[in-house]
Image 1 (tube, helix red, strand yellow):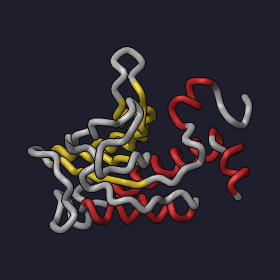
Image 2 (tube, rainbow, N blue to C red):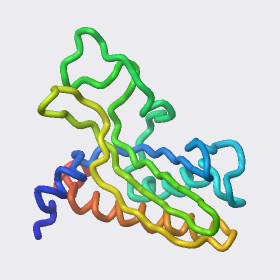
Image 3 (cartoon, one colour):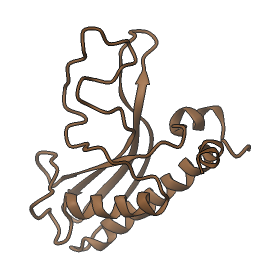
Length: 174
């Protein structure tokens, strides 16, 4: 397989080696929310701790973006004169990793998904689409460490795949 990856991998991950933001959501048997400032279902598991972990890995790979993504998936109006592939007004179309964590009883599920700006050929509409995802399911034993380890592992898999598929663009920008 070539360094750039297959056609499917290029669709899923190619982004011209652009910087990436991150979002983290935790579901503890109720509403899915960004638990930035308060405790999650396990001690040490907050939206902030998960984002810090992901951001540190993206920063180490020189991929961390700078946009505020706190409202990136909120409904937005497009400008009247916008072209079909234009970003919603006031938002940057910065690609991002979204980490979703679901904790139910003794088990957990971590999903690390890459969202990038895509164009639907049929409708002509644009928006963020999930184009790549890695999932881990396990048992936490009342501790946040196994959950955070799964987030780290899946983020590392993403960084490795992203760098491999975007290698030509990453090398051209260095």
